[in-house]
Length: 111
Image (cartoon, rainbow, N blue to C red):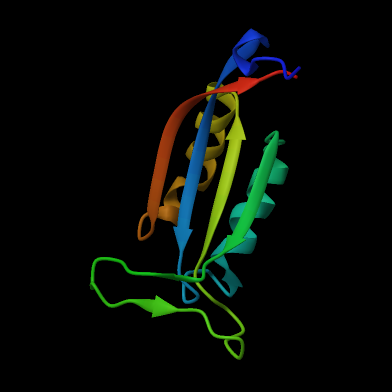
């Protein structure tokens, strides 16, 4: 019998998703790598970089990732307690002024 997930304890957290294009840079470095580096420096509980397959932005033009394309669009998803995420955003915020950042309050299940 499978246990109902709602019976497990939870704690509040914040999830941040940073949507990045291949041209997004932090100085001479990839913004994706800089976001991951800063997340680790801020000791966030978790960060995952995801490669995009297809999508569109404000231009409305659909972009697709191709096998030969070396640097497709991507997203970085970060999760931690709200106060830790806020500290991270205070640190990295100036680098994210030109990209889409989504912030969502979530509950993390403690299994």
